[in-house]
Image (tube, rainbow, N blue to C red; front, top):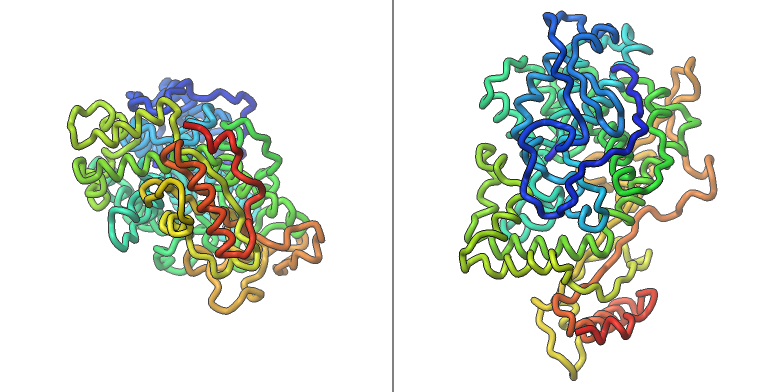
Length: 526
């Protein structure tokens, strides 16, 4: 969901005051209380000339001013502000948390996708302005390119469902057989819907390229128009090597919101990037900076996004949505944008206050979340490195079938399993490695490889991949972790499920892959 020049990094980490994790949507207007940003309404607009974006002074003088708690002042030109006004009802009022239910474990993580979209808009503008400043005549960057890239940054996440990726990855596959739905695909429909519904006068060719840029890193990648200026498609969602302003923003924003340190400096990459052979490249000396980008992202996944308690709550939210789906027909809204935009995190509140008997099981689960009576974490193990290639997701059935005779009889509905993949954005492969060194047929997410290309210095016209063994021998030899976690939905079954989980490990790997036994205190908890 959500949602230039030289951006200033703000120093004041002010966060949204909304700490109630399941609160009803309260964003009735675009303001500081809703998004950690405010709009300066005192400014007026001049006519939009073709060279409008060429002057920083003009941009600041005639633009709307938004204060973001990460990037400081963000300036929205008149064309973008018109679109932004129409986005408020889709992003601002929807209060979709940018990182799902994480705020139940990290209370500061209450920022919305709207804030993230503003940040990506700003950084996308900064990136293309930097390229224009350094290579504008050579690359033929014009005002149309600048406006298109910025608009793509603003709209790139408009198709996200409730609770971030949980809706797409955990809920829909269990209610829609063979579901291939994605938020990128929905973003394309939402863009068309917003433009048509609000009669926004935007150039057709611009909207077409915006949609191409939104899905540039997904399997829905569209043909690159006239096949010119491919580098423009690498700024917002980079399907070529994964280095894009989307990551720049959410890594810094999420780290800050959750109180974690972040020593990745995207500014270094923004300052040194250069286009060679229609591809954005970086100086060879920035190899470790790029590695830090992917490593920091992996650290966020391990520490925040897949925290054991976060995953427990996600499992419960998914179960609540599954039990409510037949009655509320939640999944039926994914095809029609006019219905889909109404679906947001407040679906939980809808379930909670509904008196219908059909929603009782869902209400009970939500009440358990509020009372912190969560699914009990039993144990976890990291899949041995030699078994990663042929790993298949572990299911509750696998655990139940590993139970030995005696004790409580387990059922599949008593067990919840979370298979957590954490990598450097390229599966089991080095994201900075040339595609020519990967096995034939290897893919990353879709059909594209990550290729790290760099240049030697500002006078060089040569670009080349860099093998990691020429940089440092301290870099990792393995680039993916697969963690299997098992939860008990009933506290009294923690012991039985933990024992069955250990049996499964012995049967599958010949060893107990977990680090330690499940504590006896947890097994005895009733």
